[in-house]
Image (cartoon, rainbow, N blue to C red; front, side, top):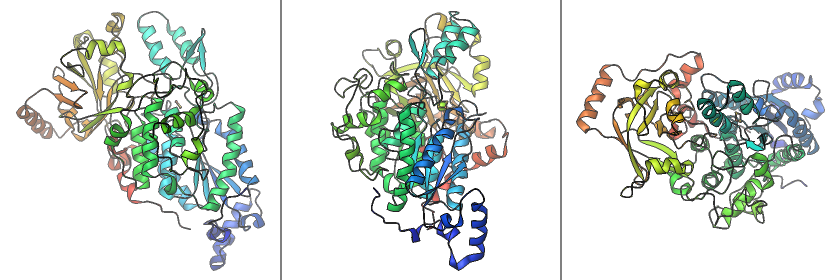
Length: 593
Ligand code: FES
Ligand code: MG
């Protein structure tokens, strides 16, 4: 059963703690403490691999809470394969519960996990992933330390239903908010509709950031094939947890590390899969961050080059109709990969955690329900990747063009002479509080030709970068039938939103990027074909505005509220390059053996 043993027990890094004849005083100290939770000296000195279970579930993190149960099956797998399991907590990140934004905590959880993986006697680790930022935080840390690591998704919730229709996490919130604005439901109806989307344990059942990042963790080769899409409460989820536990022990014996798996080919595969699944606009941020921590070249332009022309195959909300259970029954990630592989779009030789290549793993995988996962030649939409835009507003921002609705296209992109460009007049908000206070103010004269701007919402301005760029139109416009206005900003957007925003703008206003120079009333032109986004003012005027901004001491953003906010603001980079702690990137493959 066990794979080729490259790593004999005498080379296990945990032996430096528990079986070190050169330093018996320390060995005694370590042994004595770890034995007191039920392990014997014989076990700890047996040469068995010690496997960490990095636990992201807790009462504070309901999306990942089911990992508290799954960890028992992981533990059984580890034992069965001859390893010793040691479970420990990861700093919780609950996407919807953390103020000011969960984005702030990805790098904090990363830092904490790096210290644990580096500083404790672990030979390998099971990363319990799920809710949005838990996935990149865990993968980034495993990449930095570079000990054998395997990810385990907690899995999506069961499908939500309301009066015979599927209601999807997050996506239903935007819809319910519109119904409330139109007066079609009251507050109680609003709450009932929203609650219907969360019928069980697990993460968001839509193709939000969670389903995206868990699918990409599999496409990258970091979790067992077929594992990402299994709904949390299913029996199969328990079984894959067990098999994940079994497998990590062999990975230690084979010395199969994140750096063997997370190659540039693996990232390009993930970019391709991201388009085909209709993945979240948060994916480039997290994958670019992961690439930087593992030392692989990856740029925002790679997302357009390798992702833009890939069609949308997975028919999940918000871009489509279905939800997580349907995705699983239709074949999940292996079916998508096999479909792309048939077109020569996947680097088949990329290694995965089971010791086989992605090509070997997905060969023969088939689509089991073509309503949910479309065949390549009958896609839901053509060209489902991201468009990169540049201009005097920012040096890069992205747009998920696949979520442009027919209504939006008719209104903004139907000029026969210029079908991919639109112009509008800017209304600028400085942070989400400003937006909420003023959006319904008739004085702003927002109409169908307005472009809404959100600034001060980037990694520095609203520390961690808030998911606030997709802005609801004013209630009076929604009542008049105009539900979506173009939105542009330096923040992020929830993956559960179907809004065609231009987001992740870098550099952000807080770093005095072009958005900081914009004024309400400015004309702005967006050209999707050329990939440009500009304020239509002269260079002289732009220079004058910049001089004035500098005189005023630059763009103002709110004070720090916690020590971590201050620390992160001092170290964090921009969304384009992953919003990593810049000084952390220098630390690569730091595990000592
Ligand atoms: Fe946790 Fe969506 S809020 S997965
Ligand atoms: Mg989110």
